[in-house]
Length: 152
Image (cartoon, rainbow, N blue to C red; front, side):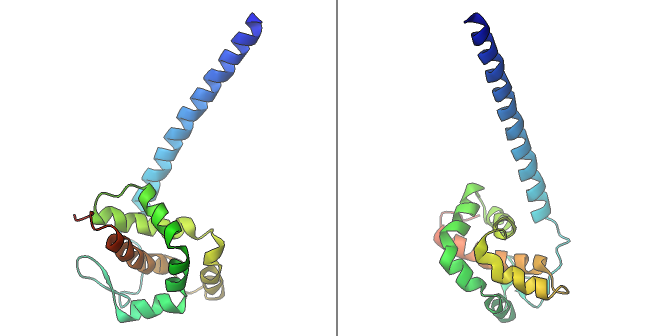
């Protein structure tokens, strides 16, 4: 019985160490994702966004997203998009924009993004990073409309 208690105690300590390691890894992944999302080296067609402060969709940018059915994808999966942004606990408009960009990439694995992935597979000269940037501005604006408490 004593040996069983010691064995369980060792197992419990191993689990606690593993949980601590997973927390560290999650924080590191979050830091890397934030760094990538804030990178100024994201290439996109500047005619798709007005480079005011903040960035705004142009008419061409809206057409760009419509051509890829992003408005429908968003409408049908709004809760999924918003839950992903909310999980980052954004406290500023900048946080929302950064989280929206990460959200686009995080959700690309979902089946509802298959038409977009098919488009980029068939058009290898086009940039999915450009889609993510333009889509994130659309997503940022919709999220902020639903969260008027975020004012900065």
